[in-house]
Image (cartoon, rainbow, N blue to C red):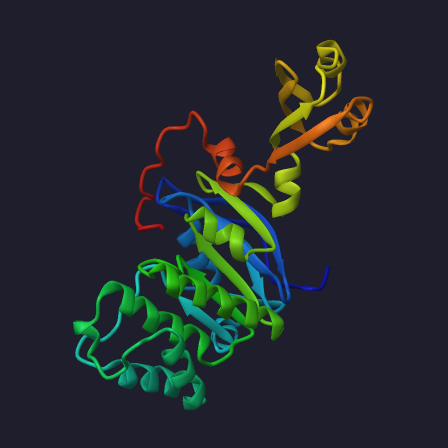
Length: 308
């Protein structure tokens, strides 16, 4: 794995006595798309604001591009495209004026690329911000994040307010960014979005990381539901005894069961009989996510900060 673009060690933030984030340790490699997953109030936005040095940690440290976010914040932010979860823009400025203003703050921009992004996202830059719907404001936010082609994109709930067609265009933008060697840190509570675009995912629960893994590795440890149709019913006890195989249930010659981890033992045993059909129901990220939140009460808002 390449040198981390983002790296945190013991990163902690409290708002008085209220929990923000606790002892976060993770790294994001150059060129990867990292998904940061959790419900509202779990600590996602607090993490992002701390990484950007918009708020200061109670303890621990964070580095971006190998530089301390507190000591070199201005230099670091110059090469970051940031989409906040709650986008605040000047209501009396048009989209074009807004983007040109933000481009000047960044030190200039390629206006041809801005127009390309606006065309792809179907954003009308002639309207004032105050006249835009929430979805069209989100498009403007995405344009300003991508337009400088930054080394790192930090996107907080990036598909909020986008219709399905625009979500697909956003996915293409992420794929192109990764092809260009850019790194993406995307925070979301929308599970299909994270599963669609991310290489790895961090799951945050009550301010603490409970998993940081590749999505495929997370799935491998989950229960998979399988159906096997045999020509004739095999001995049920042969399958009940298999390691990792649970909830074995036969209906005539059809076997339904659940398997944790590898399928090797089950497949080898099934090969001793005539198999007509196999149907595998793969776990999705939502099932994995719920594993970490099952039987938990709804998370309250963080003290002092709204978190998405």
